[in-house]
Length: 227
Image 1: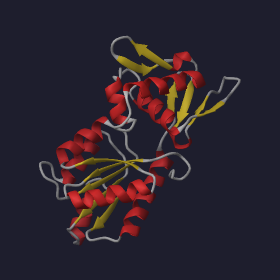
Image 2 (image 1 turned 90 degrees about the vertical axis):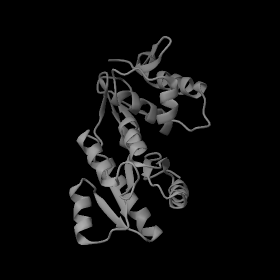
Image 3 (image 1 turned 180 degrees about the horizontal axis):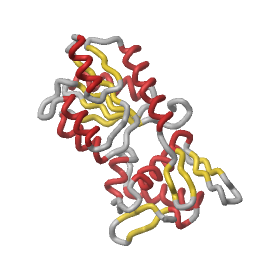
């Protein structure tokens, strides 16, 4: 099941309670989300800085790096992804701290599952409304509807699949970076996929957008082409 017709949204769940994390992963996956889990704030910070997500769900009571500290660190690095804080702390002062710390929403444990899912959907809608177009040479990638627009081309609009869009968006967000196949597998594809999957989707992008859409850096990997 896709989310709002735009392809599966990516959620980072930072939660150290294994049982709760497993439950939320199952529920979010059933809703059509792709979920990455971090068991502590340090891992959450690494994933938040190195991978692309549509929604962050962060528990406040995390080991190593507390949830609010994690969120502030992400905001300090320019990561503005809409965030839901989960916490057992329900006082007004705690909620104010969470919202002032950069969270868009705040949910007190224990919570009802339908409300949790509704809040995640609302944050995803907010993300879609604010995602800008990304430059792809003279063209523009619009991740919200998985299209590439070429104002000067005969075929002005190209529609991408979910994975094609995720791959191109990852390359476009860091246009000077060379990504290894392992990095692309980690951030775009499923754990069961192989290096050949990356090569296949690079081929698909080139077939739709031209061979200059993605550059091969021999011995290293791929980067955005048509620059």
